[in-house]
Length: 404
Image (cartoon, rainbow, N blue to C red; front, side):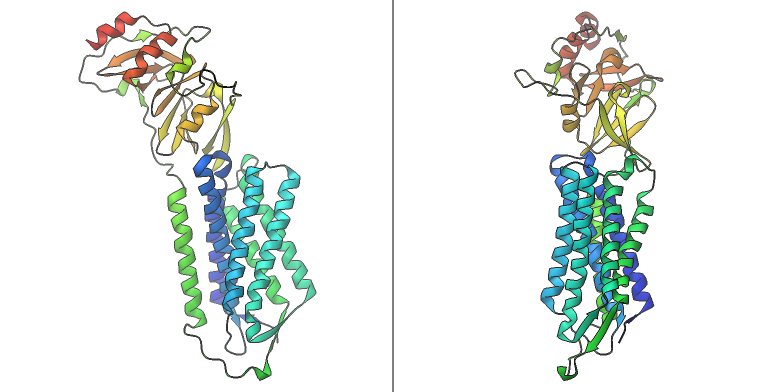
């Protein structure tokens, strides 16, 4: 007999696929911008979120099937299908994210991930063999594999290439991917013929009904992917702590601003912080930094950057007119910048030396003013004031008077 489905469970399975796709893609699009522990965390979170969403959709889709008798699910094939799903998704993300993003690697990863998802589906379906014999129509098997490969390719492209070429929101991408994953499952189910085993004997009723089990799986999937989303997706509403100069507050009289004259060659710039280093091998510094705006990835040219401010594990790039979110830590940003052009003047702040208009002391620390419109102040640690003054060829006397 052919298989029909419970409509509300079909809808629930599609929603689970979309939600898992949204969280997985939302994490995956940040992978190219991250490094170190955060990069590995994003890879793991994206793989688990996509894997849980895909597997839960398939499991709920199986529960949605109206079968002629009570059906048991064998434990081993069910668990194996979940492990296969997470593994193939994770390996595909690693292959594309860590080994470059050329077309042939994207295609190979898409085929691997799609074939793995199809394998997961049929392993999961084999869990029903304890109660019935399954017959799959060849056309549905081929069609389901093709759909899985196309869906996988779309997910990987949107995560690692599409963000630079199209402004398609992640939510729209997640809906498309969720529908594709669901389409793969129900295409495979459309070609399924189930033959109950006559000599099977009485089958005990399950402890949980199919409806209740589907709801339980859906809730767990929502909670797990929701935790990944809350932990790994940064808060873009956080404000950069660089204030306009006119709004600077101090209980002391504001000393006269000392004008900065940046020399053509910057002596001792590497002494300002970890940018560069004496005796280290020559580094090839970046000419652009990755940033995000309205869900799209941008590459900001170095000469457009005035300052960079740390906010928790992330940073914000200040261009004079915009404050753009960057998923790199301030330490990682430091490594990418030329120390002859940028200096870390505070544990949370990096400034472009060519955009420094002046330096003054405020209380026990310093403040540099950037030549933006309106001017912007950036704090300077007390220990960095003498070094910054030397780099900018500033006289020592006015700052000493201002501190007294």
